[in-house]
Amino acid sequence: MKKTTSTLLILATLLFAPVYLAHAQKETTPRIGVLYLGAPPNANVDAFIQGLHELRYVEGKNISIEYRFAEGKAERLPELARELVLLKVDAIFTAGTPAIFALREATKTIPIVFFSTSDPIGMGVVASLAHPGGNITGISVLASDLWPKRLELLKEIFPKLSRVAMVWNKGNAGMALEAKATQEVAGPLGITLQDRGVKDPNELEVIFGVVSKDRPDAFLTLMDPVLNSYQKQIIDFLAKNRLPAIFENRAFVEAGGLISYGPNYADMFRRAATLMDKILKGTKPADIPVEQPTKFELVINLNTARQIGVTIPPNVLVRADKVIR
Image 1 (tube, rainbow, N blue to C red):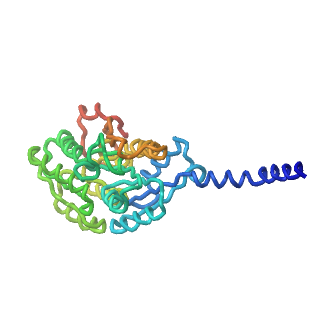
Image 2: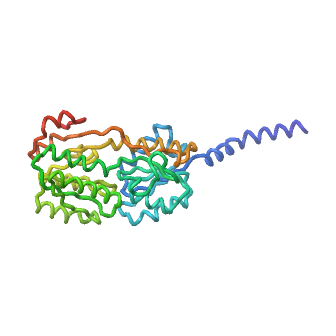
Image 3: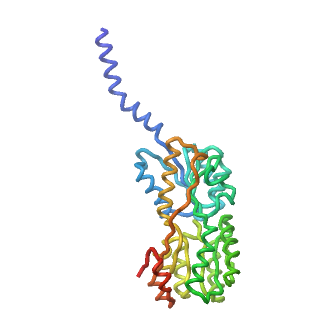
């Protein structure tokens, strides 16, 4: 009788072991949220997911991901942030100041990894880069420092430059910092910066009409997740009006823009995955320093230069990390 009972127990254990293991694995599979102001498909979000894959996270196998895209409507971000919090995800990845602010209001406990082009200290997101404090850390490219340098680069390439149109999203507080920093350097460079900020992307066509009428010497677009989704419209407008322009992201130059100067965004979004990995392995966001890029690349599209009838000085071309011919 004892032998029979023991045999039955062993059989039961073998029979139900896979069920217990599957249940345990399900309970321990991390679940993260992604909150993004733009719309899918999105190259930046894809780069972050690729970064996770390189760290051996496979969606649906050993990690679960909840996506929330605001489709360019910033007013939807608070609601989407609350949805992720109610789902009790283990951590959240986001990008852009409006999305960061929405998550900051929604939770003080769930770890957040951000990618931001703005100054996270100036925006009050973290206490310092070395010691973020709280539940937020991430990657910052400090674009408020870089846009003045881009304006200086435009002036170097086109010494007679005097009027530049600056398009940016007024609905993004982070972009306001960048616009202000760029305005401050314009005067000493002898440049009149024409502020063409928009509160809604639907205003872009109106702004394009104004720019076409004013005929500035060059064009700046302070990009955020909303304006990024209007890449084709912006590039087409510039080509039609033969306007030289400088961007922060090489993707715009590869799509037909003239010049870009800044970090490799795809690399930075993939890098953000390593911070998420640290959090999923138990490190607190407060103990993970905010990272900044250490390499910046200059990309020039000579095809575009020929099409719009401008010449890039040889001393600038030799400094380019990539020249599209």
